[in-house]
Image (cartoon, rainbow, N blue to C red; front, side, top):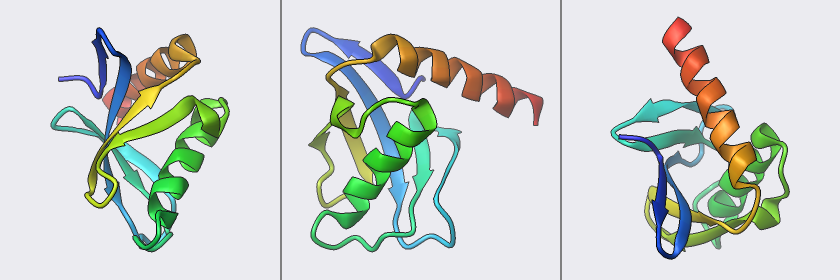
Length: 102
């Protein structure tokens, strides 16, 4: 199962976030979710903002492209992509290729 879903309401990216990690990184894909570790604490939306910022940086797109839809206070999150769908799909394909080589 892929972390990217297309629905009538748009394109969604499923994420499993780990706050307060030793370092910020995209750690892979597991059970249909992108594994994202951030150093921010899960308080007042800091970890959610850090997840969106890290994904935006990794994918080379603006943070404004990510809208948190579910998981505000949960590790399992779903972001709606309001733009840059092709860039995200291309980035995920590259990530899968790198993970397959490891």
